[in-house]
Image (cartoon, rainbow, N blue to C red; front, side, top):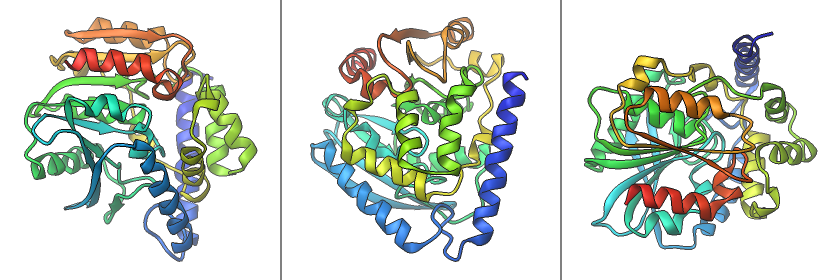
Length: 314
């Protein structure tokens, strides 16, 4: 079976599981089934956010498609840097990197609104075009012009989606192991751990998933690990991967911005093919493979990643 066919089977399974769970739900905030589950998750989110260990503020911004939760940090007059997290990871995932990133940038970390975090979807699941509208409403609210953007995993795919729009205000673009951006998932068999965790959550499956995606799961804070587990345990199966197709040659060619692409040498999502395609079609790209790092490279080798990103942005 080819990778695209296997991917579609997994995605279809997720979509059906999501539909089934929503029919049974008495309380439906798109993501959580009950108010108690949501509260347990939000408590874990607040504890994990304290791992940032720098001054920050949180805001909820009303948009036409739901409420956007944004965390801000760093010098108010510095160049804006938008952070887009990975799937089910939320903006708290930046805790190993935030001090370095916020030193010379004004941070805007945005929770994606179709998964567990503090953003809330009030409409149906969003299309690609609606995702662009939603983020642009947030950028307009903060009057962001010529800002940099860093996206991890699914956040990297979203960052690329925003960058291919003819009218955007993005300056520099950093993609950290972007999922489904240059190619389909590299090692689909190994990533099936995450699918099984989503459908049949357990501590054992969670531990196995972390080992698959990280070369150093022991570095993950127990506080953050708890939040990430509850995201998988309580949240409905995420069908939005259906909208995450690799970008075409022409779409990648259209991105003239300076771009940095980093992947781990043990990444199960990307491979050398990802970097080769980025180099072939992106006119202004730098690529680098991080040693002894998996898909969670921002945790596995946080110092190396921070140095590469900061050097590129500066």
